[in-house]
Length: 172
Image (cartoon, rainbow, N blue to C red; front, side):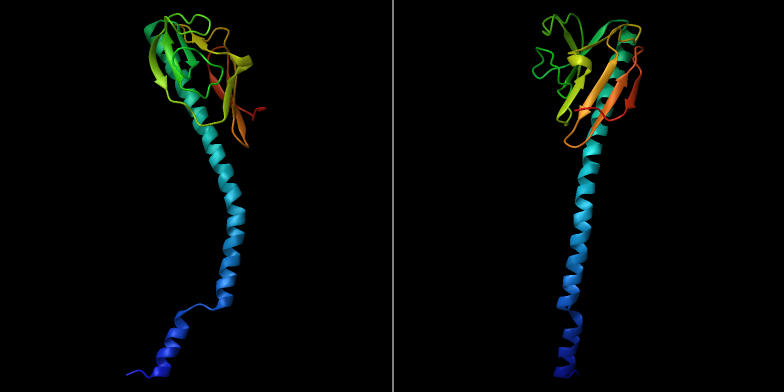
């Protein structure tokens, strides 16, 4: 049977001292101060990588469909499915038919690619659409997509043959 003094000593050994708690809090504070900004940068870069992948998939799907169906297709961003926009961060429409000016009156929408989550994505000089012929070439629509996040950016460069490559960070 334990005495009262032994029980008190046992309880005393089971806890933390004030100094141990302060040291632990100091180490935790240093780790969080260093880790949170790096985590935020990582999340920003992942968001940009996700939008690059979204654009690559949309363009590849448009090219492959144009080649397989032997038709000219149009890819354009649109907030309301009635008019093309210059913000390529909006949902992307893959369609066939006439795109008269910016209106999509006579166009048949084949697929809608969901919107991204960056602040802004622009395509060369404010182009509102990308037309890809039955050969898979975007005649006259080569250029650079600039993807802009809060603290980071990237570019996606499309050649005259429709091939894509990731370029250096862009100017936002």
